[in-house]
Structure formats: C-alpha cells, structure tokens
Length: 229
Length: 234
View 1 (tube, one colour):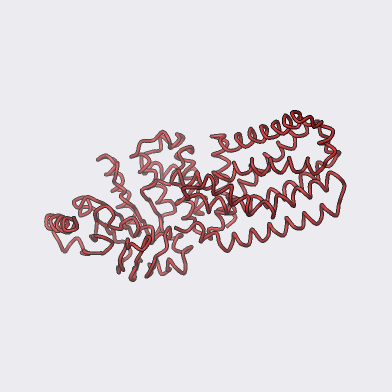
View 2 (view 1 turned 45 degrees about the vertical axis):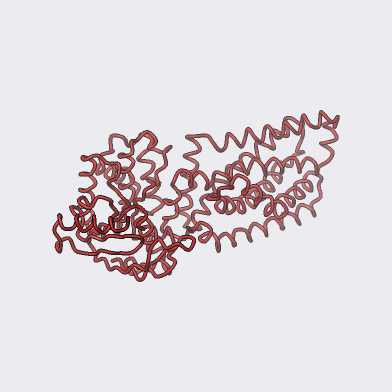
C-alpha cells in the first residue's frame, strides 16, 4: 500500500513543481493574511509589543492562517482529479483504496507544513517577533497540528470533491470537524509553548495526537465508501 | 474468465442495467454494441469496480467484484471515455506513474516499448495537454495495457481515431488476444464491431437483447438485425 501511496504523492509533487498552482497560492495567501493582521492591529492602534506579549493572540494568528491557507491546499486534492477526469485512474489502484488517502495525505501534509513554516517566518518578520529559541518545539507542534488537520481535510476533500456546492461544503465541513478537534488545541499548545506552560503543551499535544489517530482510523474504515460511485 | 450473474445497476431508482447474465471465455473478444444510454459504460464500470452493483455480481478470474475488488483490479486494464491521463505530465511520465501505481515495471525500456506500440515514442517527452484527441486515446489504451492485464475493458476505443490509428489499435487488440487477454469493448458501429469481435452482444435499455458468436451470423444479417433492435427502442 505504501508503494502506491508514494506514487500518488510523487505525482502530486511533480505536477506542483510543473504548474506551481497550489503551493504558490497558499504561500501568497498566508502572506496576505499575516500582512492584514499587521495592518489591522496598526489601524486600531494596537502596538506590536502588545501582540507579542499576548501568546494566545500570536498562536491564534498563526493557526488561523495555517487553517485558511491549508484549505486552499486541501480543496484541489481531489477536486482537481475529479475535474480532470483522472479520479477513475486512482480508484483503479490494485490495493486497498486507503493507499489513495495516504498518498493525498502525504502531499497535502507537505504543502500545508511548508506554508505553515512560511507563515511562522512571515509573522516573525512583520511582527518583529522572536520565538525565543523555541523553533524546534514550535516546528514539532506545527507538524503534529498540520498532520491532524490534513488527516481530516483529505477525507473532507474527497467527500466534497464531486458535490456541486463543494466550494462552500469544504470550508463548512472543515470548520465543523477540524476547528475544535485540531485547530483550537493546536492554538493552546502553541500558546503554551510560547509562554513556557509545559502542562498546556503536553495536554493539548496529546489531545491533537489522539484525535489524529482517530481520524486516520475512521478514514481507513470509511474511505472506500466515500470515494465509491 | 468473466461471469456476470444477474448484474444490475440503478441510479436514483432508475435501472441502468437489468440483471445481466454472461459467461466470457478466456481469450475472447466481446464487442458490446448499443445506442447511447444502453448501459455499456455502466457495465464496464461495474466490472472494473469503479461502480458497485445494485444487484447481482460480476466474477473476474474467479474473484467477485463485491467480495474481492482488489484482486479484480489486479486483473483488469481499463480505458474509459475519460482518458485518465494528466495533461501536465508527459506521455512517458503518465505511463511511469500508472506503472508504479499498478506495481509493474516502470523502466524506460518498458515505457518506450508501450509508447512505440501506439506510435507515440517520438512524443514521449511532450505534455499530454499538447496531444490531439486521437493521440490521447492511443496513450490511454497503452495505459490500460500496462502490465499485460488478463482482462481488457475498453469503452469505445475507436472514437476519435482516424483510419491509421484504428488500424494500430486493432493490431494492439489482436496482440493482446494472442497473449491470452480477454477483451470487452464497447462500440456504436455494428460493422466495425462485427469485424473486430469473436462474440457480439447488444445492450438496449440496460438489457442484453442479443448474444451470438460471430461465426453464427453473417455481417450483413447482423447489421440488419442490429438496426432493427436499436430502431425498436426509438
């Protein structure tokens, strides 16, 4: 199953390297969101120092950006296959179709994680923010959160790909399912990390990790039925 | 090699296929003819597990599409209306990707051999998006034949092809049959169907209304009978 998953992820990376449609739009979007926050705070006379002091605001800005930029990466995961008429080729994979899920999870995770790292840098630059040597743990928490987000997002993307109303269905489903299971705990974990509250980090990381495992298990059980005609 | 038992499919309560029964021997080339909406494409999608039967079962090489779809997918090669090709990948990259997906050799020599068989070797490094409809169709058939599948399911493989390309595809099918493959292909043209097939099937409104070996009927009689069967539905 891993061989097929790697083939699908490799194909997505090759297509992205050639067309640069997905990643570039996600990175530009994240840059726009961070800049918007920067100017919005300036407009309301909220000084950068005040933002820096509130770890929760920093974490929320980061994860809201990851969430919406990630949505741009998750939407085309299956919708592009459906539109291009190539979905059938993937469904003919001669193994459990969970391989298709894993392949799309791998490519989506890489795209969202790269955009998340870009967002961390954009935030550091435009808010003059110092992560205080927390880069390692911050990247680890970001990776776990984006894995949880992607594990839900890929299933939701498959579910909504053939719907006429997919442009609104995908965000609605993602907000409903991922917001309180992955995004809010990831905000809490990141805020805990930046403020040195290790207990908050551990409890929220365990929550996100557990939910990620549940999402993977549910996807394993349901994915074949989701993509079935 | 292929057995259909009361195979049926409904879309929103409307029957697309009505309890088909069929037994196809290994090495046979069956041509399925019928008007638009007769259920030809639906039948192929059920056999290759892209769609799930509403009733009945299809057994490919001893494996049920309901109980053992993965094993069925290992045995079939499929070319549908959609070419299943990535327009932003080159011809060679498309075949390499599907070879990896199918777990068959993706070595350059194998890919080049397949491209050569459909006379696209000179375009191996060109993006599929720059190909004509006929070239895409030939590449799609090459993709379906990767790994020499035991059963080939081809949905109107001659549509959009000029006379030369039709000859190339016919040669490919002849070679596949000689290699032991069983072929089911759909077509609109009864004369073309007669010339190609060992066995002639006609679907009308989701029901199998005709099933004869080619040797049992002359070309002219078959064409006349086909026109009556299809005309009777209008």
